[in-house]
Length: 146
Image 1 (cartoon, rainbow, N blue to C red):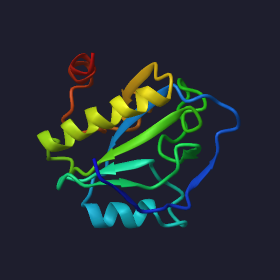
Image 2: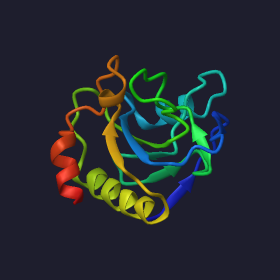
Image 3: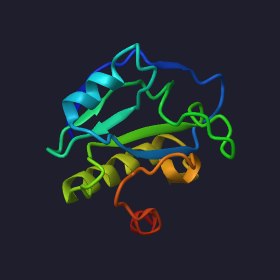
Image 4: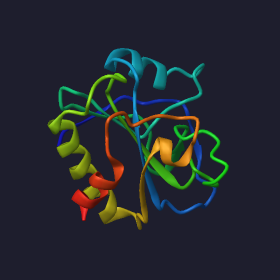
């Protein structure tokens, strides 16, 4: 898997919190606009990775840092510090492509070798104000990973 660096300034220290979660998101827009927004210091949002519909994978934030992707999650404390955020390039009416899902599974496999991942969740599962990832059955996806 080829990973394209596209650094974002929107990250902070993990403050000693161990990574135990992967949070899957949808960009809700096209790739260029999403990368521009996630790398803009004014936005104050980012992710560790973006998986494009084309099959390209972009790395925005070092895994040693907390990307600002999850927001405030009352039932999931320290969401950004304890997680790795992965965005799928996806409009609300689009389903993820098979290529995106295959890359997502491969990336998760690599991350599991380096971190003690206990949870793989969709953004909507930890933040009730969110609807992403769009058109991805998280229960079925987790079963496919097993």
